Each structure stands twice: as structure tokens, then as C-alpha cells.
Length: 160
Image (cartoon, rainbow, N blue to C red):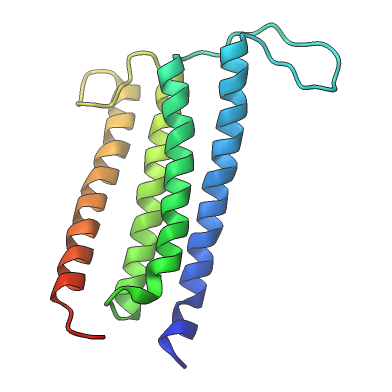
């Protein structure tokens, strides 16, 4: 069995997560629209629900863009997986790490919307802030280790 055949399930996994992240971007984007409008309205359904969603414009925009960009990155990694100089085990680690980083960023950004004082930039006495902080922290650490490892392996590799 070729490496291409062995990594096909990993690529499918990444494509699936990329699609789910894009779906999340669509749902968050729709909610973002309702936030901007100040009410919920779904054409052609008559009427509207007068409700101002919580959060700020910046937080909604950030959560929407996090989902879009992370989804695109996951799709990109799925495409690049065969070119990375790792054995199957290393490629599996790359795939799972990319999925984890993508999801923790989107989840943390989405949680931030609903908790006003939860920017997640540093630990504090506020539980919701610490959850956002922990998610971002995991994402940043895994991302940095992953990028350093990929750079190291790619730049040191002598394989064609």
C-alpha cells in the first residue's frame, strides 16, 4: 500500500473538519447578520423576532472570520499532507494537531461573544475568561510546536 493510500483517511478527516468549520462560519455569519440587524428575520418567513444578540461587532466578526480562515487552513493542510516529509505516524499527528488548533480557536472566539469580560488574553478570576484563555493557549502552543516541527522537517529533508 502506498503512502498516498495510507493517508487518504487523514485527508478525508481534514476535509470533513474543514467542511464543518465552514458550516460553523455560515451559522456564525447568519447570527452575525442578526446581531447587526438587531432582530432575527428569515425571509420568506413572515415577521421577525425583536431580539438583540449579545456581544460586540468585533467579537462576532472575529468568530466568523476564525471559522472561515481555520476551515480554509484545514482544507489547505489536507491538500499539502502528501508533500510533508513525515512518516504516516507524523502525518497523523499533523492532521490531528491542525484540527485541534482550528476548533479551539473557533470555539474560544465564539464563547467570547457571550461573555463580555472574557477576552482570554490572560488568566483572571473570571471562569469564562479562563476557559477562553485556556482554549487560546492550547491552540497557540500546539500551533507554534506544529509550525516549528513542519519547518524543521521540511528544511532539513533531503528527500525529493
